[in-house]
Amino acid sequence: MRVVGSGRGVRGDFPRQRDPREAIMAVTAPYRTSGDPLDRFFDTVLGAGGARGGSLMRAPETDVVETEREIRVATEMPGLRQEDIEVDVENNVLTIRGEKREERSEGEQGKYHLAERRYGTFARSFVLPRDVDAERIEAAFENGVLTVRIPKSEKTQRRRIQVGGQQGQVEG
Image: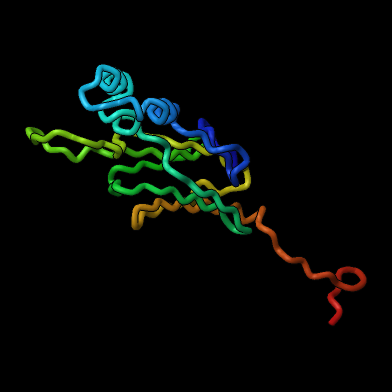
C-alpha cells in the first residue's frame, strides 16, 4: 500500500517531516514577546497562536498493518466525532477526511496566552493493492481512533495445499 500526498512513509521508510511553520517558530520563540511587532507578524502569517494555532490541521498519525487476510489502517483522531469523519474508496484509492471544529463559542471573551490545538480539515489517501475486496471494507471509530479494515480478495489469500501421492491421491 502506498501513501499518497504525505511526506511520511509506511513503516518509517522516510523521515518524518515536521510542519515548516514549527521550525520557524522554534527559531524565533526566544525573541518573541507579547505585543512585539515580530510576534504580530508571525501571528498574521502563520495564524493566531503562531505555528500551532492556525487553521491548518496536520494529517493525523496513521499505522498500516497487513496480515494474511486484511490490511488494517488505524488513524488517531482525538477530539473528533464520528460525524466529522468521512471514508471513501474511488479508483482503488482509500481516502480518509475529517474536520476538527474550533470549540470557542461566539461572543466568548478572553485573551489567549497559548493556542496550540489545531482546527480545520485534513485528508489522507492510500493507494490500495489490487488484491483487496473494496466492497467489504469496514470502518469503526472508537476512543479517538478510526480503524479501517480492508479485506483481501478470497482468491489471493494464502491457503495450504495438501500434497498427495501418485496421480493426486492423498496418502495417509
